[in-house]
View (cartoon, rainbow, N blue to C red):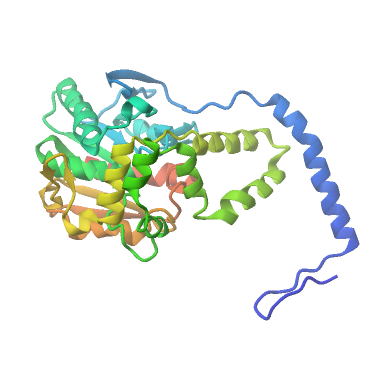
Length: 361
């Protein structure tokens, strides 16, 4: 039989034989699934040995240990977003931004924000940016003997890094931003468009901390067909492939291993960044201090993903016209918001470009 079609889509031909063959193939996949799952080890994350070097409450700073000593005298601190766990940068041995940087001689650290609970309800952006991120920076400055360190901010962690660098330019030697939102009001920024009508005061006053389940559902509904249906239908094809299933489940674990959001910090980020477009309008305040991106006079390397549905390219590229440095450059990555960490192309291109850029400075 022939499936209904329109003028722009070629008809798909089905026969009794092709349907029977497809049914048999799927049946075999499901039969193999039990054996596959029985043999799967516990799905863990992290490919690289690390050690805790500093702590402030729930917030921990880790240093990663490479197979050979680092050749860089300047520490590289990675600041990730609050909404997901930072182990995305070191997901597994063949998908690790951290490992790529270590192999090239960088001295790599990551700040782990931990899991917010009710005791964190009144943490503000100033706590995350000045107390926690600033505390990690000061620790690394003292430990390394360097007056300034290198800072790599990713997504929301990039926004935090921009704020910190603008408020403390004397402590950051080089600033790298990756898939970082700057202009929150671009027309193709669906997530930002959704937040314009959100009453953050009412939400936070009613629930306190914003639950991870609520945040995850919001992100998944940005691409409902792809994230609710298509990827699980596609999973059928790998039910008999233990390695592929392990990779799939590791990614699923990361997606749903999300912390709750501290209420006050969520309120402030929503109102100042998403709704107020504070970087563009110059209206962001961290504590009592105004954030002026023109104070960012250190070299800046801005990395964005061409097919990013969370941080569209134009939302990130806006940074170039706002910072005070004459040493601003960009890297365009052909991929999406997650592919920039885990795709095979990213494993070579991203750490190599970061290392080369730092080495030139």
